[in-house]
Image (cartoon, rainbow over all chains, first blue to last red; front, side, top):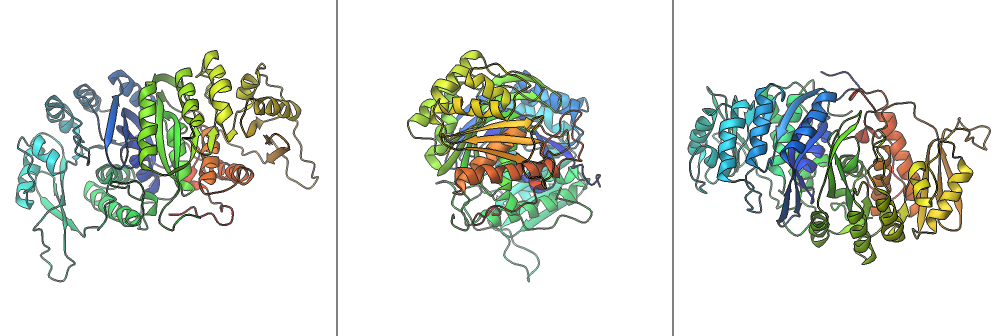
Length: 292
Length: 292
């Protein structure tokens, strides 16, 4: 619990999305909605909208470092998330900072590809994640495609929960304390509770000992741009409030579900529209204050 | 009034503030708090915090253009604000876009200096504002210092309301439809209503015919970082909702007052802390819906 007038501070190290559905724009809105003051280190400026990523301008590594320094030197950052880092040099640099102990409660969302299909990272970038950044993560949150690459396999559309668990184990072997492999719309995932609603989303959470399969109802909307960014920043936000990892992940999934519902019907752009972060109507876990 | 599920869309063309008190970070939070979906074109990435601006990385002009294109080609932008543009080339380029009719309801906040004292613009930049951008503005919102430069005078600490009115007239002569000269903490400004609370803030609004002096109570806080950015984006947000300029300016000032009050007591950083945008507790003008 923080003092009544001081929200916890988190840092997002990520790209800028001009269409504001993803990137630091999604992170700022997510964290604000969850009562956390979001600071930023911009790694890349993208020209994108709901239909495509048109251009990417990478911010020099020393300028990314300067932003991180400016924030850490002045504000009491209690959790950090990384999103699109863009270049192997930035991945390595952020990993080095983390190894020095400067990036508390590090959530690594290993962004390698946009929902539009545009690839953001070279094979050297993937290797930099494996070698330098994942070992420092409190939790890594790859989607299926990213998990395949990080686990050393080949991306596949036919992955099931068993293969997600196997990928989580292999990624955990690289060093993060926790791994969340996000399943997206996995076919064939069913709830074991016969009374439950049809389950269409399943994520695998692993801490090196216990596997937890987190299931939830699918939201029927094409407004999904920025879902991954929002989930990882919501996890960082709840960690900033002092939640443990399991609580943070569970609550973050509920937040994203609510933000998807809140924007399910709106019309913003001709492609995959954004979530409605401030449209989340849920309640945070007990003891966490999301209004300030 | 917009459709119930479709918030109006605005565009902020501005710099990024890693400390997230000002720049696009303030714009995103301001607009989100006011029920507007904020898109962005990042002109510069700054490494700054509540105490100083340490480094600035300028985004290439063609990349700024690409971001504006990506947004305008896909989303129905109904108002635009400019903040820190950084280079004369960007000022000129944005002015050209506006002259072509591509930037509706343009709010020009001619950012030339940070509250920390760091100067962001060369004399060529000031001239670019005068020649290329101000003529396209629906409203320009300089502070005293910026107004002096744009009006062709010398910045002075001793400006009073009469000199603000004179500057507003001269800036209006450059072409903007409206001018708002922000007074900050002007000494010697008193309300003509003997029953009113002590007035310590006065702004001058001018449309070429009528001068309106807008007064308001000063908020006693050092957490003022991003006040100017927040005001101009709040004006753009209310314009996006369909408000006329006078209503938008008046309501935006109330919003900023509320956001200052909401963050007056918090402790974020060792210098001038940010406003609490989501801590605004006010009500928008009739007919405007700020929750979505």
